[in-house]
Structures are given as structure tokens and as C-alpha cells.
Image (tube, rainbow, N blue to C red; front, top):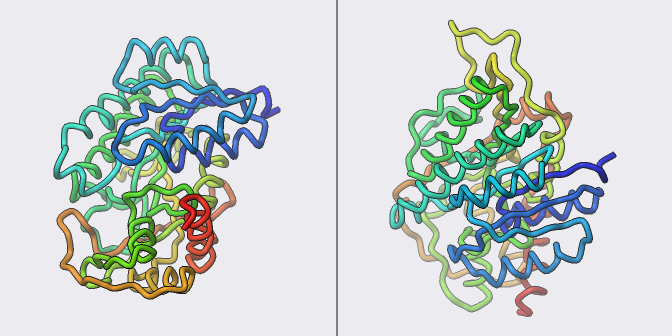
Length: 339
């Protein structure tokens, strides 16, 4: 029964972490949520998410930074989780240009602490957030987990690729089942204020111009938060297993002879940025004043997820289009900020 199962979720006050915690709590899981509550973006938004989670009797919150090994090891020992979902990370592609050390601390050292915690607690399955950004400048569409992803264009992307490599060593040496999930441009209610949809909504409602990079000629595989959560919930209950057909002569990057897996979670239906803005304008009932800008360093022109691996493993593929997801975000934004 799910009600007897214990899951530890890092980044619980974050966008995806909040939604995942709430879904699992509604399903009867016992959830321990961990978050450092850093100030990368508005802490009040994180607190508001936590307030809603703390209404559930089976939710326990721990204000801990992943880099604090003493507290992390003690937490793993006391919680003894069956499953761990690591969503805590220093996010953002562009921020890595200004504050690179934050990525080394949170995404590398912090992730190592998670791996060690799982090792000592004999965790049954570690699921962790990777990112579509690791595909870098590849123009081979759709992005497949079985393609090479060795040319990231940002330190953030490099740190996520490093997480996958680190996880594989623990799967190989210690038999720890690990599954990495490459998320594709997640959006929806309670989203991050540094994401384009949030920034655009705030500016349009304030009558301010929006910066549209590469003149809007970029495509993103926008993925609604409910689709992301459904994918995570299904994956976490299916611990990674060794691929008995794996060959060192022709290695598959997405699987291994160890209990290691990589899956994309994306909409599999890229949307041009200009189209997203049109849908947002319709939802807001206002037109945007567009300030066209060149492509930014670290940005890629297009993303598109091959989700056949996810669908084969779980029977699920994301289905919610921006025409449904964007109005839901706008409704939440107006209610939350009373605008």
C-alpha cells in the first residue's frame, strides 16, 4: 500500500518538488521534503508552496542544504526512505555565467551527498532530475537518450550531465538503481519566476515590454507540470534494472549492464516562442510589446523530446498542449498575485 511507503524528495519547496509532494501526499504516501530555501528566486513563493504541503499530516519538512553532509547523513538514517527523488539543484542556464560556483556546490557536491545517503540507507531507487539542456547544440531531432550528449553549452547543462555519470558509477559499483529524467521546459501553476512564461506574464500585465530572444525564432518542447509529475510518479515505482542486452562494443548511453536508466520527459511537440506568446496574449486578453533581441549565450535554437523510452517503460507520454496549459498558468498567476 502506498500509505506505508516513505519517499524523500529534495527541492520540495521548488516548482516540480511542490507538485510532486502534493501528488504523492494525495495518493497516501509518507513524504519527507527537504529544501535549503535559497534566495535564487522569491523565497515567499517557496514558503507559500510549503504552507500548502504542511496541511497534509503525512508531510515532514526539513530545512537542510544538500551540501551539509553531517545533516544529510543523519536525515537519511532517521528517515530510512525506500525511494529518493532528487529535484534540488541550482537551476538556470544564464545564471551559471554569473555564479558558476553555485553549480559546483549544489549540483555536484550536493548530488554526491544524495548518492552517499542512498548508499548507506540501502535506498531501493534513486530518481533524479537531469535536463534537456545536456543535448547542447545538437540539431538531431527529436533528442534521443541513445544519442551522444557530450557537448553541453552551459555549466548548468554540464553539471546535469555529470549527475548522470556520477549516478552510473553508483549503479555499477554498488548496485544502486538510479533513473535520470531529462525534463523539457517545464511550466504551469506555481512555476519559477525566472522562466520565460512567468517573466512574460508579469511584464505584459504591468504594461512593460518583453525581451524576445532570437526574434522569437526558437522552439521549445514545453511540458506542462502535471505531465511531468505523472511521469515521475510512474518511473519512481519502477526501479531501474540492468539491460541484459547492453553491449560494451556498442554502448547504449541510456541504459547499462548496471541498474541505470535515462528517460526524456517532454511534450514531443515543439512550440515556437512566438506562438507561445500568442497563446499567452489570448489568455491575458492583452497584447505584448515585443523587444526583439539576438540569441543569448548558452541558449539553443530548438528542443524536442523523443519519449518512446518513457512510454515503453511506463505506458505514459505527455499530452497537455500549451493551449490548455498556458491559460491554467495565467489563472493561477492572477489569483495568486491578485492582478
